[in-house]
Amino acid sequence: MELFKQTNYDFLGKKWLFIGASVLLLIAGFASIIAKGGLLYGIDFRGGALMTVEFASAPPMDKIRSAMSQKIKGEVSVQNFTGANSKNDVQIGTELQDERQLAVNRAAMDEVLRSTFSPAAAGKVDLNNIGRDQIVQQLREPLARNNVALNDQQLQELVAALKSYVNSNYSGLITDFNQLSGVPGMTPAILNTIRDTFYLAPYTVKSVEVVGPKVGAELQRKAVLSTLYALGGMLIYIAFRFEWIYGVGAVLAVFHDTLITVGLFSIFSKEISMTVIAALLTLVGYSMNDTIVIFDRVRENLKLSRREPLEELMNRSINQTLSRTIMTSGLTFLTAIALLIWGGPVLHGFSFALVCGIIVGTYSSVFVASPIVLFWHNYTDKRSKVAGAVQPAPVTRPEGARKSPTRAVK
Image (cartoon, rainbow, N blue to C red; front, side):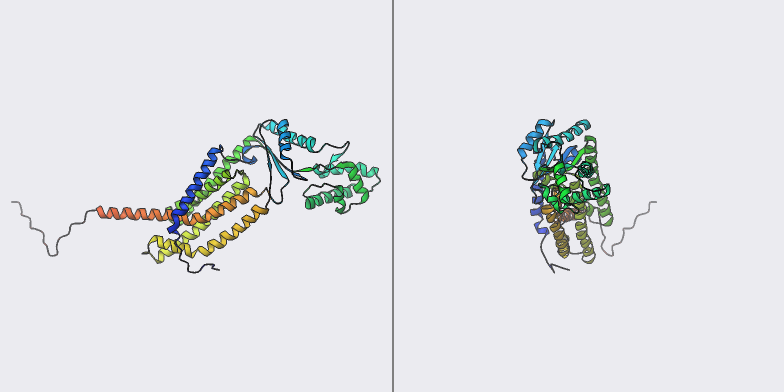
């Protein structure tokens, strides 16, 4: 399927415009990194404790920040997610510390949330922040006391159904016990027992991550090495399949894509996590594939039109692959946009990297990789012409000229 037929756009004639835009983006990215004292690494790389908490209503950010800062040593970050599906989610993180202090901070975060937002009722347990086994233990005796006949197997199945129902319908957080009336197997007697045994905190802890400093540093080193290994392997492959300059052009274009994307993360103050590294590696392969398609068409056209100027031949090759580029990049871009809007906080960094990388990677294949190859060939051709001009012309004799006879020495 071709969206564009027999197009003849002068892409390489606009190369300086896009090269200038790339230079500005690179300068802005590096300036942002320097001004902010480096990249903003996630918990995966810098180490620390990270807790994601969902509140039943708009979270009081100042109250959370103040309570955490009073009880936890070191720097504490409190961020509110503003996505469509996570408007009441808060991410609480502590700075990099030693392993023992991390465990203390993890326990302190739980204690601060309970004391600040959920003062426990006498003899009751928080249903929104308790596991399945604990619910079973807490319910076993009250059910027997209220003459509710449930054996252990039935109780296990009821609690499993309750947790599944709350997670699927209320994202793990309920604000009224009557919301449990739709749980399969729930009866008024069981619901009253649950109401007498538990209370409902206005929040639920969705996830907790604890990463030590040594693990974070090792992950950071491996992330950098994996990206460099990928670029090195692709350079060898393209140099073998085409010419070495094609490999250099493709790798420099992909390196350009990676640097600009990382710079945009710094400009917009977004964390770089393991999912972002996965997105960057995905972009390396995606952008490289797009560049190879163009170079492959250039190679085919070179076999057919050896005397055509290289810039015209490259323009024709780009026009011939334009439909394929728009279709693949456009569809992938729509998917990445959907993830960015509706993917939630977990996939936000991944989708943001994809959106930025697809835009930058698509134009770099045309306006960065191709001009590098063109500049090199123009440079080598110019050197060949200069070398041919300064080389002395060979001495030739007129036709019919004969060598002068040599006189023999007597």
